[in-house]
Structure formats: structure tokens, C-alpha cells
View 1 (tube, rainbow, N blue to C red):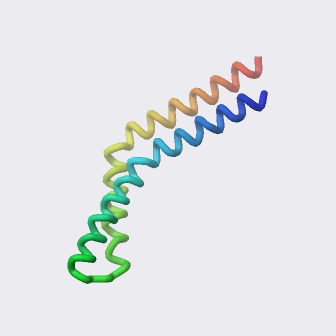
View 2: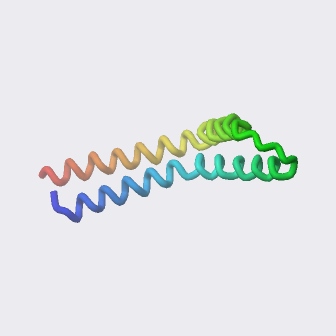
Length: 89
């Protein structure tokens, strides 16, 4: 296996992780921003108030994007197995 192949596989792995985690991270960031604005407007500085809404938002996003994420991971894994099979020949 050449160094170029390893770098290509690593780059695709990082792209897949970022693409898969992106929707959940964006949902958590948006919910955190909304709660921060609410806390600033009401002067309620409770640190634990942000955890539950963020977790709920991440789980809902995971339910919505779950099939797409599974398809993304299956495509990546199939591509890895195919490249391993072709390199071995």
C-alpha cells in the first residue's frame, strides 16, 4: 500500500466523520445559542439548563438524519473494502 493510498483513505475518513457529525453539531450549536440568548435576556445564569435541550436536539437530529448517516457510513466502508480487495491483487 503506497503512502498516497493511506493519505487518501485518511482524508476520506476525516471527510466522512465531519460530514456525519455536522448535522448534530449544528443542531447543538443552534440550541445552545438560543438558550444563551434566553439566559442573557432573563439574567438566568444556570449552567445546567443547556444540557437537556442540547441532548434532545442531538437525538432528534440523529433520528432525522439517521438513514442518511447510515448510508454514508455504508458507502465509505464498502469503498474501503473494495480498495483493500483491489490493492491485494
